[in-house]
Each structure stands twice: as structure tokens, then as C-alpha cells.
Amino acid sequence: MSSEPAREIPAQAADKKYVRTGRLISYAVGLAGQNISYGYIGSWLFYYLEYVRGISPKLSGIITGVSRIWDSINDPIVGAMVDKHRFRSGEKLRPILMITPPIIGLLSVAMFLPLNIGNGAFIALVCAAYLLWDLFYSFQDVALWGMVAVSSPHSEERSRVSQWVSIGAGAGATLAGLFPTFRSAVEGAGMNTVMVFALFGVVFGLGGELISMVAYRMKEAVETEQSKESLFEAIFVLRHNRTLLLISLARYCKDVFNTIIPWVYFFESREVYDVGFAQIGYGNMQVFYTFLTGAVGAVAMLFATKIADKMGGMKRLLIIAQVSNIICRVISYFVGFNTPAQIITTMVLISIATVPINSMDIAHRALTADSIDYVEYKTGKRTEGISFSMQNFISKLSSATVQIINGFVLSMLGHDSSRKNFDQNPTYMKWQWPIFMLGPVIGAVLYTVIISFVRDDKEEKRKIEAELFERRKAVENKEAQLNAD
Image 1 (cartoon, helix red, strand yellow):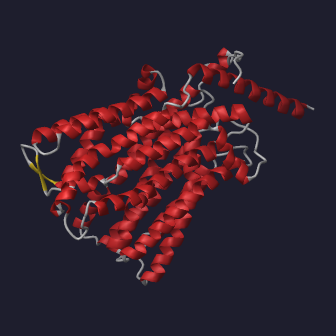
Image 2: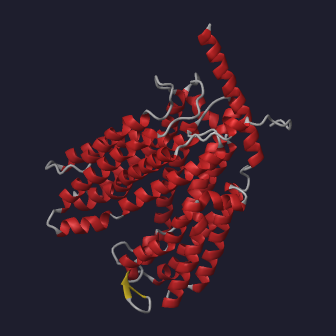
């Protein structure tokens, strides 16, 4: 970038607010609805196939494998397609928020239909429905998160948008996570399991998607000309986005090492946990641990942008989050998790670590939105589609990698799937605590090193915004002149 100072955005334009509170609330509610639907399908579809419909683990595994391959390859392609297309309104993303939800919702219902057909026909139905579901979901997800980048030309306002839509998404995922409680209540009232899953296919699957349509109220405040490049070139433009590539690599390293052994394996290593005043079964202990260690961090998300400002920017927030994670996990490892005092101390330490950790997605999205401005500054192209498709691509790629690592580690430790986790061999019982608590430290160290190379300069952002303002104003003036002639 040139060292010559860029012109400042005129004060009137710099002070203009593009995101009204009502639209922001609608956008956040829309993300909540989408995550209700996704949380139900993502967490329970394959459980439903194997344990409710009686599909063999081998066939369920084939379905899972094929779907994950499809998941991984379609996101960048969909992102590039979104970047290349403009609707008649001139908009790039917003119409997708109205078109895709009903289709996704109906496909969600189709996967849980209580049909009395053979396994072969049912598997064919689910596979077809899921592959279509994932394709349309990718379009919706790219458009929903891409709206963060076009909600405002000002980075500070986009950070606020990122904060509230991340909170909305988290609220939706939390509601979907309550499905086991709802399931128990409905089954207790006399409904059979197949019908329960079908019911929530409608309530969570279709209902969540219909709720997501309120995100359409958000406006696109940033417009650029339609790209004429090929699909391959639209994907390859990522080479200009150093920030996004670094964030993606850092997230991959962190996510892969976060679950070297799935956390549920650790909690199921004992039938009962003694916390002094009560004996808590492993299932309830998982719930308590998740809630108690996440509640403080969830509240902190309400103040994420202010915390980031105090720390010196979103990059600093990300680094501090992982440094605190490393410190708290190392201390927790030496504290242990055997006596009531140890359990409580560890939960307190992990709760402290989650205060900045729970705001990391907000920082990732805010920095990604800023990086899209930088790419436009360098190339003249807006890349909301391909840029936000990368968050899905990395999540799915790391999930597939984790499954491979899980199998290798559990095999190496001699884990026997035919026995209860609390009845495993001494080697497994010895190593599960250090792997559970210290495994994520490896990912945190790698993440911190990689993210330290990300640029997060407030003055640079202002210069880029000023330059883009002048370019867009010039385009508007040119179009107005042509229309006048």
C-alpha cells in the first residue's frame, strides 16, 4: 500500500449510520432461526438413521462419508457463484435470504418423514434430500454471513453487526441443543420416537428456516459491479486475502487439536462424579460442565466490541483468548479433576478462559469483513461469497480430520468400543485427562503463532474506507451523468 496519506471520508458520510437497530435485531433473529435448523440436522440426523430407523453403522458411515466430501467441495464453488451473480435488484446476497429457507425447511422435513418403506428406498430418499439440503444451505449460509461485510462501509459498525449476529447464532444453537429435553418430554407424553423426530423436523427444521427469513430486512449498503471473471478466477482471488487465509489456517489448527479425544469420552470415564454435596452421573456432569464453563463467556459476548477496543483491536482479542486458554488449561491439568475441590477449581479456570474465547467468532467475522474491503481496494472485486464460504469449508475440513485423529488415538490407547468408557484399560484411563486438557493447548499455540501475522491496523482501515468511498462516489456520479445524457 502507498505511504501517501489517503483522503478522509467526509464527516457527514463518516457519521452516517447504515444499520438500524430494528434491522440488526431481525438479522440476529434470522441467524438464530438458521442455527436452530442446522443444529437439529447436524447433530441428530445420523443418530436418527442408525438408532431410530435401524440403518446399519456401515451404511450410516457411507452416508456420512459421502456427505462430508460433498460438504467440503461445494462451499468454495457456491461462494464463487454468489460473488459472480447479481439479482435484478442489483443486490448480491439479500434475495437469497428469501429464496432458500423454504426449500431448506422442506428438505429438513423430508429427511425425518415417518415413511413405512424399505431401508434401501429410505436411504436413497435421505441421501438425495441431504445433498440438496446441503447445497441450498451453503447458498443461504454464505449469504447470511456475507451480509456482515455489506451491512455497512464502516468497520466499527460491521464489528457491532458481527457481535449481535454471532449472539443470535449462538442462541439458536443453544435452543437446538435442548432437543434431548424436549424429546424426553414428548416421549413421556406417549409419542413414539419416530414421530418425535418427525415432529421436530417440522418445528426445528422447517420452523427455524422460516424464522431465518426475517434476516431479509437487513439492507446491502455496499455495492460493486458484477464480476465478469470465470468461476476458477473467482475462487483464485482468495490469494489476495492474506488475512482470511491466515485466519482459516489458524482456525483449522485450533479446531483439529481441540478434540483429540471427544470430550464426551472423558466425562463418560466415570459413572458418577462426587462434587461433595451430591453424586452426579456422567451425563448430567457433561451438561453442568458445558453450562458452567460457557455461561460467563456467553455473557461476555454482549461486550465483545468494547472489550476488543480496550485490548487494542480484534487481533489482540484473538491472541489474548488463546493465551488465557493455554494458561488456564495448563493450570487445570495440574489441579486435576478427581476431588470435589479439583472439579470446582477446574471449572472456574475454564470459565475464565471462555470469557475471551466465546468472542472469537465475532472477531473472525469482523476481520474477514475488513479483509474484503482490502481485497476490493487491491482488485476492485467484492468477495463476500468466497470469503465467508471459507468458514464452512474449514469447519468441515477440520471435522473430517478430527474423525481420523480420533480413531487413530483411541486405537493407539487400546479403547474398546464394546465396553463402557469407565471400564477401559489402564493406558486409556491414564492418558485421557492429559489429552482432554492439554491437547487443545497444542492447537492454541499454533493458532497464536499464525494469527500474530494478521494485520489489524485501525488507521489503515480508515484509509482504505476513505479510498473506497471516493471510488464508489465516482461510479455513482458517472452513472448519474450517463442517465442524464
